Each structure stands twice: as structure tokens, then as C-alpha cells.
Length: 287
Image 1: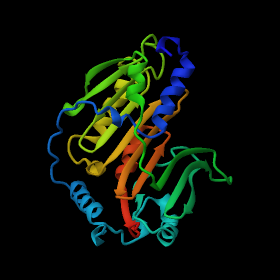
Image 2: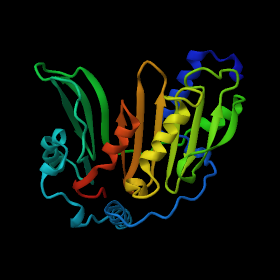
Image 3: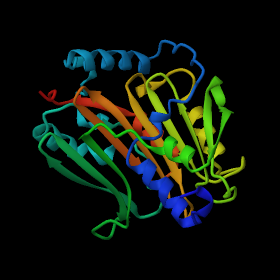
Image 4: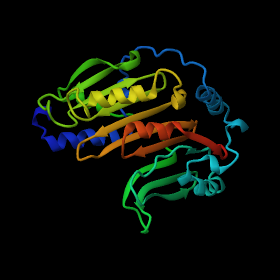
């Protein structure tokens, strides 16, 4: 069906489904410029050790935390249970934002299975049991995300593709929906660095809250140097379809058989800050 015959709601749903299935546009392989060589830093040093660990499947002692107290407070109480029940590398955040609302607290719901876990992250009132709303999910040992049919879909639906310059010398591709220039989710930006691919869709135009604005925010937050976990393979997507429902989804590879996924319903810069604080606390490698 030509793109011009799609209604606005169908277009938005189409975009969301294409992103959520996990590929973040990596199959598009957009042309990008080389990123400057990463300077030496503590984060880079840890990433080099992590990369070696992925190859050797051996986790060195210097990556282990000596105490759960080094983790962000909401995750300290569940770390011991995870180490007892999981037989693969465990990563948990050392940073987590304040609820930023009076009398509110973070609530974690841990679910463990064979060689996997899921932590549902919610926010609720101190005086009540239960969760007011879900803020995110951290899961370990998820399967490798599928490649997305997004680029092929856009091209087949008569969607324009333009080159776009992003900060730090990065060049991406902007996809423009034919006939819907003012619809939220009608354009998307995809770019790729050494081991990562990125997908962003929000509002058209160049102003605050636009796809271009969010793409710039994400590139600037990651920075040219001190790339953190970008030394490991991964994917990041950000979608905003209106109604104050932003979603950042980050996949990264922990070893040859283990992927992590972090979903965050909030500011993408905050999601990146939480993700970059992830620390290895122990756990065996999956055989």
C-alpha cells in the first residue's frame, strides 16, 4: 500500500512496531564518518577488559564489585538474590535518579528464570503498596535482537531518504514520510558507529522535541571520547509518539550468549546515564 494511503494512526503504529521488535534500523547500514580514536580513560580501560572477557569468557576480578553498597540503592537488595540464582554475568546500575516527586519511591519487581532475569522498575507512593506506573525494565540474557525491516519498509512506501550531519562528525540518514510532513513519527534518523546502531523518531522539524533535536541530544550525551559501553556491540532506539510517552531501548552484548536490554520511559539522556553506570558484580558465564 502506498504511504500516501496510510492514515496517521497507522503510520505511528507502524513505526513503533518496527522499532520495538528490536532492530533499531541496523540493517540499513547508513554511511557514517569515522569517530575520533577514544582517549584513555577509566571507562575505556574497563571496556577493554570487558571486550577481552567476551572473547575469553573469563571475568577478571577487577570487574567485580566488593559490596552491593556500590550499587544504586534500589538495586542493592536484589543483587544477592541475582548472584545466587543466575549463572551468567550480572550487570546492575551504580547510578539511579531520584524519583523527583515528594513521597515517591522506586519499586523493583525481580523475576528470575533459567539463565535469565527481568527487573520491572516502577514508581509508587511511600505510604502505599504497589506501583503507580512503570518506568522501565532491565533484563539479562535476552536473545539477540532481530534485524529491523524498517529501512526496506520506508523505501518501499515512497519515503525520502536524506543525508544528515550530526555532532562529532557523525553522518546519518533521515527518513521522511511522503505526504505526512507534520505528523509525529513521520521522520526518523538512523546512524551507525563502530559497534552500535541508533534509531530516533519523534516530531518533524528542527525545534525542541523534534527527531533532529533528540538525535543531537543522544550523540552529545554519548560524546566523542570516553565512550563507555560503546566498546561492546549494541543498539539504541528512541521513539516519541506524543502524549508524553518517550521510550529509550538499549541492547548490549555481555558475552557470546548473553544480551541485556534496558527500557526507560523518560529522558533519553537519563537512560544513557543509567546504562553507562552498569557494573559487573559477578556471575558465571553461560556454557
